[in-house]
Length: 99
Image: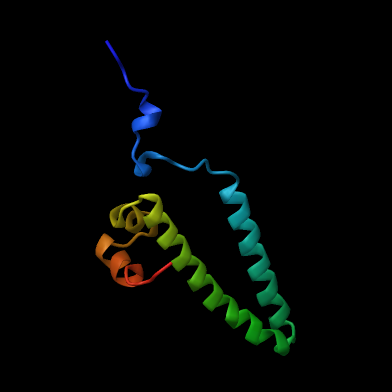
């Protein structure tokens, strides 16, 4: 009897990238953003515009991440669940963006 290796028949959706230090990396990014806010709060008014620009950068990064996850095979439902929103809300917000 012939058998097929499971690794050769997996769909792209079944392939999961190994997660490496995501929690630590995200915590590091949060610390940097908070530190930047504290710097502005101590009188560095010139840095205020840069801090606000981070918001736009973050929105762009989230959109890029969602588009990448969709291309990787994740469903709108899976993405919405991780974000605490419905699949419809996720699709409405990021479904029209192009990579």
